[in-house]
Image 1 (cartoon, rainbow, N blue to C red):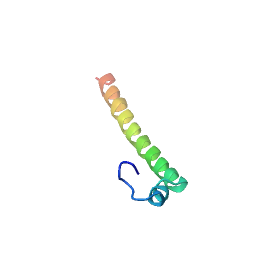
Image 2 (image 1 turned 30 degrees about the vertical axis):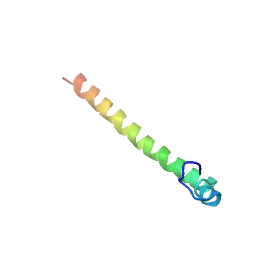
Image 3 (image 1 turned 90 degrees about the horizontal axis):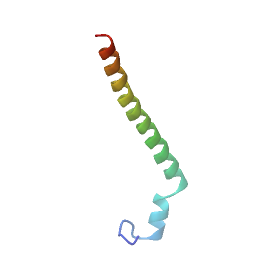
Image 4 (image 1 turned 90 degrees about the vertical axis):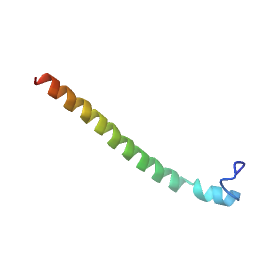
Length: 53
C-alpha cells in the first residue's frame, strides 16, 4: 500500500490470499518444470549427437 499498488487494505488482502498464492505457486512450478525439462532435453540431444559422430 505504501508504494501505491493498492488503494485500500481490503484490495491488497483480496489479491494476496491463500487461494491466489496456491494457484500462482502451482502455475509457477509447472512452468519452471517445463522450462527445466526443455533445457535438459537440449543438453541431452546435444550430447547424443556429439557421441554418435
